[in-house]
Length: 291
Ligand code: SF4
Image 1: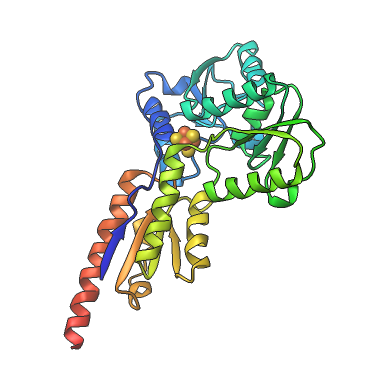
Image 2: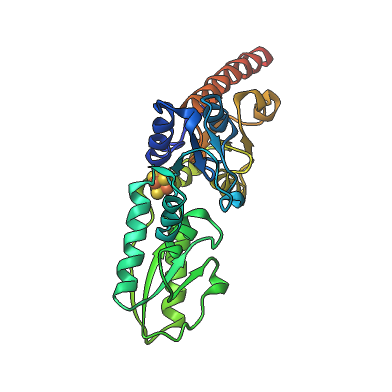
């Protein structure tokens, strides 16, 4: 059995840098993460083992008693930043520079007097951070059905950094169609690591008979990769660790792909790869014995 790894997969530099900041904290007992940095239990366990606490996304309103708060790679809005500072918190800011770019694009488009359309998930922390810095004049559009005639002379369009490029293009086309007289200015804010990973998994799916995707059970982008494979008729399995691999699952296949969600640690991917290699050897031996 052959195993092909996606050309780009796993943790993006934005989340890696944030984890590195946590790894090098001199006072982890004083620090709490303001929200959820990653949706991956292996990575979260590593953070907990350092003594850093974290608040759940829906518990951000209640501030940790710890004096230092770490802002995650997803960023926060300006008013939220002010709230934390007024509460006397010292902030450790790990906002990804590519998220800062989205914030800037939104603010610039708003300053031009445009109604800002944000393609993304309204409740996602990154989107809340982007729109929270805009005083008014914006709409979040998640699905094609959310697109309508916005009745505005000029529109600015940006995307949550992790939006699929295909989805973003479809949404933009529908926005143009529904607002034929508006002056529309799109700004490409999809981050490069996301784009590369999505291209890599699409390319991989073309070459394999089945796909293994490694990532947290509640990681949306991991689930989406598995769904993408299944939508093309490929069996896909979503696992969190190498221990979950079932050798029997691989029996029907000669070529299997390996990909991972954006919050998966490199070590976890390597462990899964090594286990797959082991399974492949065992299956190959078995198949030769049958001949
Ligand atoms: S913007 Fe891209 S690189 Fe930055 S944290 Fe988000 S996914 Fe990672």
